[in-house]
Length: 631
Image (cartoon, rainbow, N blue to C red; front, side):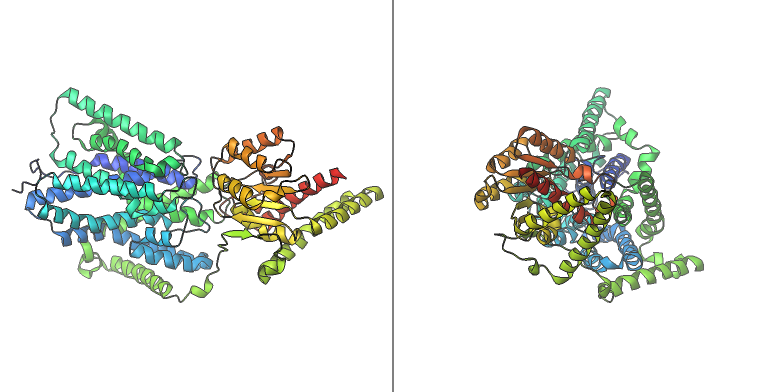
């Protein structure tokens, strides 16, 4: 009997309590992806999956070593392949076919993401492509597979390390100590790569920076081996287990309810802390005498938990594909309900007809001897269609159907001498066309309202003033991705404008560039437009610092419309500043865009041509009104 571990060998048993925890995790993730405002910390469900995986896989490895005296790595990996890959392959095949038929303009995106998913390197692919998990610039129906990539990498690497530690470890303490060291290395890397007040997708996606969550589960397997727990324990001991476990679960749910995905503390060790507090819930759920474990094993939770893998796989592409035709944050309730129903149906079909049969039968699933004629025809037909679609797509045969999404990360006219001719001709033509359509419609409405000659004359004077002023004015525009979004249009309307927009910009960065690059704008005759808050909240003190930087200039603060939980806070601070400072004018884009779904891209934040025209028009109208009042 191997003596590497201090506990005896006992038969394996199915850990139904873990299915209950999986159910909670996948429900949280789905709610978060349906609408992050409903459960801001729902993304923490991924960490729950991570720690459960580390705990369960290590427990199985320990049990195999104790039972057989060795670890059969090939058999372990085959079991993982049968469990995980068929469902992913099926999902990718369906997503590719759907894309080819209904959304061919994004086929290259799907092709690249599919390749990364098939090799389980999605997380590194998104890191190298500088993709944001929190503010995706284009729909990515397979982006959720980043977490499965991390788990699969763990399944490949950890058993090898486990075997090496068994072979070369001098005592039963060697392995836990080694795992503890690896945990702290991963935690150190997370804090090292984390950048305050910035998009920390690199930290979120990285195997190196997320490994500590899985490794905490590994450590728990050494401390609390599920197959060696006593089935008979004193009642007081049972109560202690349940009390600690229930408290831990409540804390996890509270974190899911109130944690924000942009919080700095999460990526400075907070994810480690949250996972650490989750461990008692896992420990209690697997104990044979735990009432928490029995409660988590109810039929509903078991149904969801056993299908949690399928639910996780299918929910995200269904949500992404459907949301492409709506505006985020303004999706009808019946559409959300339909997304949930379709997710459950797809998950059940995958679980019943793909995952379970292949897990039990392996490649016999496709052999004639194990199938009726009808079943063999259906399986063969579906397989050929999916494989054919996958191969022709990966070979690039349909690449010509793809349409690139504008990924411009900044718009900077530097000193204001950049002319509109520097804008690509196709973009310039579209801006002129859309502007003409927009202004023609405005002129028509204005003409209808100008029933009296006096009013018509006044309108003409305003237009003449606007034309004269805008041709010579050089206001300063500072902003984030929305400023990048509207920059070309502003430059067309105000040729001498100084525009500095950058994707992901935060308030502290706006303050810094204002002081270092644009102090000469701080005079009575200058106009400063600040559009910021798309990427997160800022403090009132930071906003006041910006205003003080231009305390002699006219400052225009643009309110935001983003379907995220900081929207109200940002707009409240902007209105507060408008009331407190005489040189501040609020441009209320939030109010002006109310009910105008047609202004927005599917993310509910960035603007299409109509939205760009409407926002620029709103900004210019406010500037012209202030300038005319000076006359």
